[in-house]
Length: 131
Image 1 (cartoon, one colour):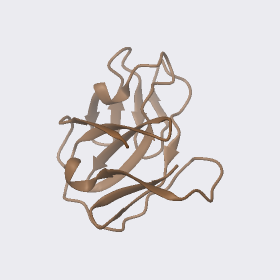
Image 2: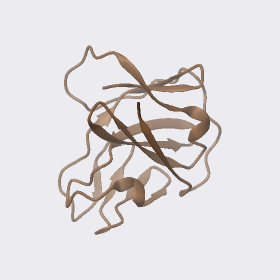
Image 3: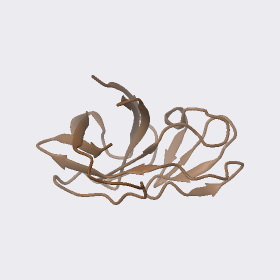
């Protein structure tokens, strides 16, 4: 099972397109895709937290495409999904670190380490991730 926490923050985005694959900076491979959310639960310009397979994951809908990265800030461990989404940047609510949701890269400190990212695809209205 998984827990969803929707966050209606962020800018404008277009509606999603099915079967769109996302890139990942995650090392390794060969993992099976698992359902982590329903596309209808994550409207354009929104983000949500998902707990799946022992991982806290942030999913964001940016311009109709889905991206997933770690949800725990690498600076002090705050939940990024409690922050704000502006375009493809999420800002941590604790100390204002900003991360690029497409790459996991730190855009503005105090965080120094990037977030892990996860490959996503949408099939039949389900968001699937390689965990």
